[in-house]
Amino acid sequence: MSVQSVQRALTILTLFSHRRPVLGISELSRLMDLPKGTVHGITRTLVDQGFLSQDEQTKKYRLGLKIHELGIVLSGTLELNQKSAGPCHQLSRRTGLLSRIGIWDGGSVVITLNTHPNPMPVLPYQVGPRIHAYCSAIGKAILAFLDEKTIRQYLDRTRMTAFTPHTVTVKKKLLEDLKATRRRGYAIDRQEAVQGMGCMGAPIFDHQGGVAGALSLSGPVNQVLGDQTEELAGEVLSTAAEISRLFGYFPAIMETGAS
Amino acid sequence: MSVQSVQRALTILTLFSHRRPVLGISELSRLMDLPKGTVHGITRTLVDQGFLSQDEQTKKYRLGLKIHELGIVLSGTLELNQKSAGPCHQLSRRTGLLSRIGIWDGGSVVITLNTHPNPMPVLPYQVGPRIHAYCSAIGKAILAFLDEKTIRQYLDRTRMTAFTPHTVTVKKKLLEDLKATRRRGYAIDRQEAVQGMGCMGAPIFDHQGGVAGALSLSGPVNQVLGDQTEELAGEVLSTAAEISRLFGYFPAIMETGAS
DNA sequence: AATATTGTCTGTTATTATCGAACAAATAAA
DNA sequence: TTTATTTGTTCGATAATAACAGACAATATT
Image 1 (cartoon, rainbow over the protein chains, first blue to last red):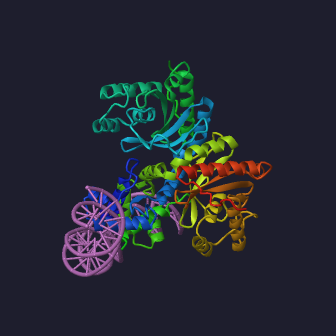
Image 2: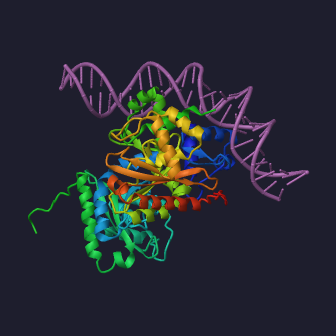
Image 3: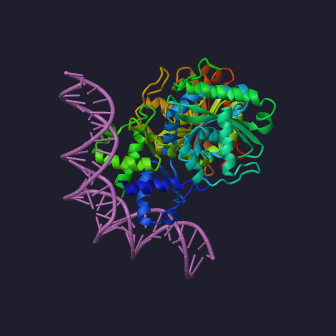
């Protein structure tokens, strides 16, 4: 079935995180529950190919530049990113707010693109790659338009913890929120993830009408969800629709004549 | 020594490029010169762990989001990026030009950060991750301050091809350029990589005085290398020095008294 | 100075991944 | 449509391969 050593190698890579950027052999062998010799062989191969780099002095390991390269290849070839780049930028320029694109992947959201209204000293992605679906506009915008089975699965498997006093942690309330999201066409995040930050997010559909991802606009709460909420919502919705159109999605108008 | 299957798995990953974002099993087995069964086992493992994703319809493979995640972990934890982000941004805002940070890695340069003066519809990295050292300001800025042995190795192993009429393809001329770079403290790229684009780059040193990377400023030739060249050079040099200082590098003033 | 922990290496064993052929499904050609 | 080719996938036998444990020196800690 699955190749053991490769599996182990990949697991080793995923042990490196923002919180734990450098790891030594002993630490790895402890985490993996494998003999040092075994881990060393794999690690060596990863270093040889540039997926890990080893500090010459401390002998410890960190992620290698090859990963950086591949990451760029990926984000550059992501269809969603390619189609969203232009519209997303214009949106953030018109509104003066931060706009982002996220994609659904196995129970959470991965941010794949963000554009800044003002020049900022930013690393490619600011907030971190993976965010929770239940407390983000992007997440809720996607979730709301997934099939019911997937939503149920998500609710069953997710433990909702609060990040701010405003975070919704009750499943029933989330379901209501999703319903409201479907009704109005876009999702709202009222300081649910970050204190003081408000977001609105709209889904992006592919040519089959499936959810390809979502677009969000975020900034200070009073600025995003204040007087001009409706204007902004319109902007977000039309931009998302514009991107959906690039995917070949043209919502068919079913209602004809009557009423 | 090296674990074969892991090596193969990593090679498979690197076969995916901007030019070839999707690959099938047969294609892979041809490229790897391995039986389909073998490749399939490895590919499956890569998919299971999220390093590849498989299109449900075409059954073909592309890079998975796990790689995106790891790429972000890496660039976020790169010491050079962390230290450069602020100064780099301010530089690009003051000058209105694009500024980038690059790092030396096995004979070429990897761009790890770039900041835009104006909001632009950009993917995280615009120019592509790896660039040649001999025809870029960043590359020459780094190269010039590496030890002689490494420079010689680089020259021996590199075939210099021309990208524009201005590209230097003669090794002797490159050596002279590096000498001039050392003398003036920064490197110049006069449309050597891209027609119409000019760059200047200055090295960044770590606490031991080794080259940690380089900073570059680029834009239209006449704008970068025109009247205000000297001003800009000063900006670039002082910004690079500022970052070096964050690394704990304080160039000691050796000349005392006499002459 | 003494102890503990680190990363690395070696050879032997049997686990493990490779191989090649056969499979059905999908695509391309006739 | 039918034929032919290509696709991704499965399977089981063989032998090559990677795992293992212990020993090593070097570094870090006490």
